[in-house]
Every structure is written in C-alpha cells, then in structure tokens.
Length: 112
Length: 112
DNA sequence: CCTATATTTCTATAATTATCGAATCATGAA
DNA sequence: TTCATGATTCGATAATTATAGAAATATAGG
Image (cartoon, rainbow over all chains, first blue to last red; front, top):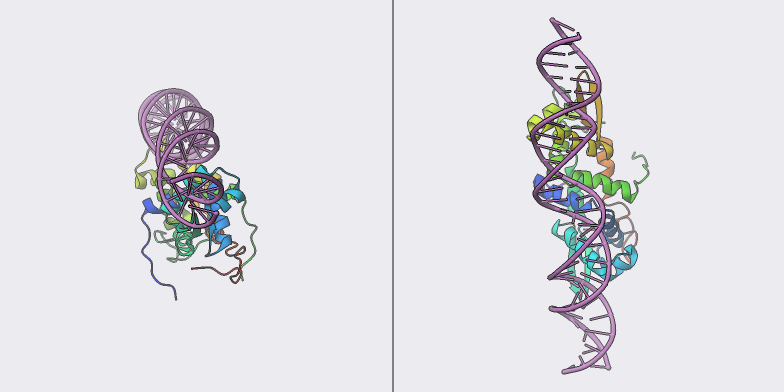
C-alpha cells in the first residue's frame, strides 16, 4: 500500500533536480545507489569518480542539502548513502497531476 | 509487462535533470504535464508562469533538447506537450541498479 | 501587399556553478 | 603529544546559465 506523501514545493523539487543535473553528481549518486544502504566513504567515491577531494565534498554537500544523500561519520571517514525514499518521491513528482487540466481526456491518466 | 528500455547515458540523464533543475522550467513542465497530450502554446505558458516570451522560448528549448517536451506548429502558435514516456524513464533512472554493488544485501532490491 | 499575432534570434548583463590547490580541522593510533 | 589519514573550508578562476528588451521571422487574414 502506497502511503500519501506531501508533494515537495516546486522550489525544493527544482533544487533536487538541479542537484542531479551534473554528470559528476549523477555519477556519485549512481555509485551510492549501487552501493546500497551501507554507502561509501568520500574517499572511495573520489577513487571511483576521479575528482579531487574538495570537489567531492562540494558535490556531496549539494546532494545532501537536496535530501538525496545522507552522511554519517564513521571514525575518520564520512559514509554517504543514497536516500531511496527521497529518490522514489522525486521520480513520482515528474508525472504528478498528469492530465489534471486536460480539457476532455480522462483525469489522472498517464498519457503516452 | 514492462518493456526493456536502454538506459540513458550519464551525460544524457544529467542534461535531462539539469533541464528540470530550474523553478521556471519545472513550472513550465508541470503545466504541460497537467495539460495532458494536447499541450499548451508558448503564449499560454507565458501567461501562466509570468515570464517574457523570449525567456519561455529559452526554457522550452532546453526542455525539448532534453527530450522531455515535444513541439509542433499549429498555425501561428507552437504547441508544447510533455513526453510522458521520457519522464517515466527518467524517474526509473534514479534507482536503476540499486544495490548492485552492495556487499551482502539482496541484489536489485530497493533499499529503504 | 499590409496588418496583427505568435515565436524566435540577437545582444547584453547579472548571477550562479564547477573546479582544484593550499591550508585547516577532526579523528584515531602510537 | 605527535603523526597519519580523511574530510572540509577558503580563495581564486573559468565556465555556464537565466533573464528580458529589441529586432527579426513566420503565419493567417483582409
């Protein structure tokens, strides 16, 4: 059963999409999604994506501020993990309200 | 049955997300999704979103180049409509390959 | 052809974003 | 405390993006 989740404001959704709108960050997120709930440390991400540590910090912070990635300290490392629920919500946002304003079509259908 | 669709490259997906990463464009897209398959003309979009015509052309072009919106001429107007399939694919992209690299968890599950 | 309407192109400008090295901070170990 | 490691902050720079007015283009109608 699908629970009802408040729709994010346009502002928040746009920030989340903007966070994904960079090849570097999308690569980071994809690595985290593939890594699953245990996540990866910043350093591991840097090794996989080939960018400087300070750049990684920059990108991960943007993903975290957008609510798509969570960070927890583990010793001297920071473990990052993708927030699967947030990603699902964001995906659902894309077609939310589909056809609600359509003049003659059936409402809430997903048009093709 | 869900048909298998080739995953977009990181580059293409990032461009699509970047296209959505603007409040103005997200408002445009949302209006088009709500309008359904018949779509809306540039001028109608301008009226709803309160931006100048040249700015609308700019944003709609970015959405179209990202493959999220289609444009067809109708007399002296340009009708724009959201591409629901593209939006679905983009939503699916977010959790694609989920947990594939996880060390001990079940594969392809959506972690929470 | 002339006019009106709808959209696009051109141009300029303001604002934001991405990148990385160097220095700094935080943690754990000897 | 000293050292090593992992991450962040700072500062500078290059590149991209958003915005809109003015001029140009496209279409329809008289």
